[in-house]
Image (tube, rainbow, N blue to C red; front, side, top):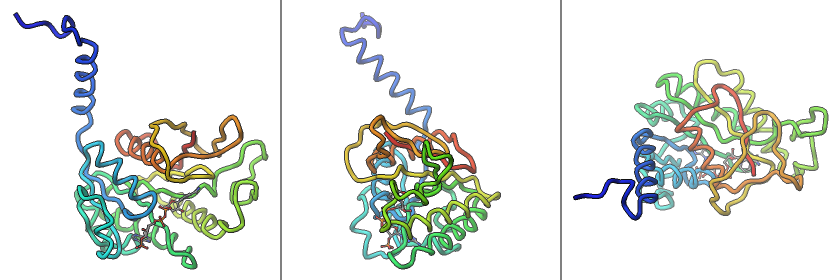
Length: 242
Ligand SMILES: NC(=O)c1ccc[n+]([C@@H]2O[C@H](COP(=O)([O-])OP(=O)(O)OC[C@H]3O[C@@H](n4cnc5c(N)ncnc54)[C@H](OP(=O)(O)O)[C@@H]3O)[C@@H](O)[C@H]2O)c1
C-alpha cells in the first residue's frame, strides 16, 4: 500500500514541495517588459524575474547590446523615451519596469523619458514600476530635510543625477492615468549578494542600526519583483533597505 504523504519518511520535505507548488500555482507567470535591461539594476531585475519563471522582454536602445542580455529573455530594441516604442513593447504585458539612467550630461532626459513612459502606458493600460532615486526621501532625525539636500548621504558628485531623479518623481506624482509605483533605493546600492531580505519603507530613508542606508542591487530586484507579483503600492513611492 502506498504511504500517505504525512507518513513518508521525508514527509517534511514533501510538505514543503507541496507548499512550493501551491505558491507557484497561485502566482501564474507574468509577462514583464524591462527598459534599461542591460544596466546595473535592469540586468538584475531581468535575472530575478526569469528565476521566478516569468516571461521577460528585455529592452535596450542599441541592438548591439543584445549579447549582454540574459539568454532566456526576449531581446528587443526600444527607447523608453519614445511613446510609440513604449506602447508597442508594453502591449499585452502585465507590468513594465523602468530602470533607465541617462548618460552623464543628459540627466534631464530622466524627466522626458518618464513622461514618454506614462504617455505610452496610458495607451496600453499597463502598470509601471519605476526604479528611481533616493533624492526625495526625508532623512530621519532632520525635521524633514530630504536626501537631495543632505551632504551626509549625497556626495556632491551625485547631485545632478539625484536632482534629475527628484524631478522624475515629481512627474510620477502628477500622473493620474497610469497605475505606477516609484521605488526609491536607499542612499547606497551596489552589486552584491542576493539574500532575499529587505525592509520596506515609504517616505523616509531607511537606516540600519549603524546608521547606514544600503542594499545590494540583487535584493532591490527581489523587492521589485515582490511588488510586481503582489502589488502593494499604487501611485506612490516606496523604499527598501536592510
Ligand atoms: N541610491 C540611489 O538613489 C540609486 C543608486 C543606483 C541607481 N539608482 C537609479 O537606478 C536607475 C538605474 O540605474 P543603473 O545603475 O542601473 O544605471 P546603468 O547601469 O547606467 O543602466 C541604465 C541603462 O539605461 C539605459 N537607458 C538609458 N536611457 C534609456 C532610454 N531612454 N530607453 C531605454 N534604455 C535607456 C542605458 O542603456 P544605453 O544608454 O546603453 O541605451 C543603460 O543600460 C537610475 O534611475 C538610477 O538613478 C539610484
